[in-house]
Length: 136
Image 1: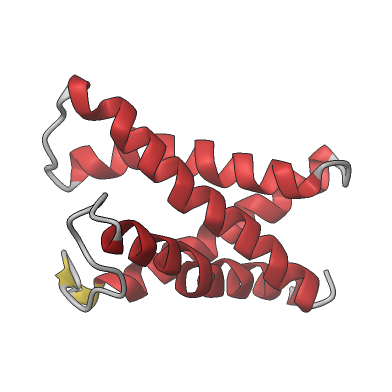
Image 2: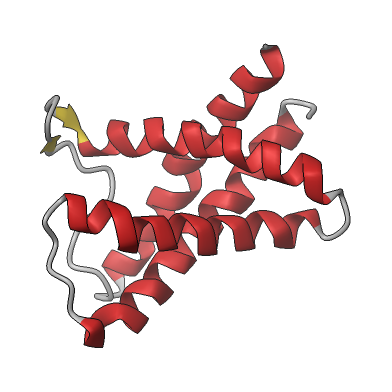
């Protein structure tokens, strides 16, 4: 049980310390139009966007730990980055964005994937950093 709580916590904190920081850098560079650490309410519960992202980051942290346990420890940093960069981005583009009503423009897909990959790869590495700090 403690193992899963640590995995959730690592994913939660990785959103704050890695994903949102990377988003801030991309925003400062003019690559993305939205700022990090948004307190805008999200539907349907009205939770601040950053807390919603942290919650989902925690749930994805559970999945990341489960996947990494099955893939072994070789190149674990690369695996964490690729898991975050690919799995989370694909789910965001194919599931989350349509559910939130974001338009789908095939011409924007490569750019959205690259930006998502960067943000979510940072999350994956950050989750592993926290897991290592927690001793897992």
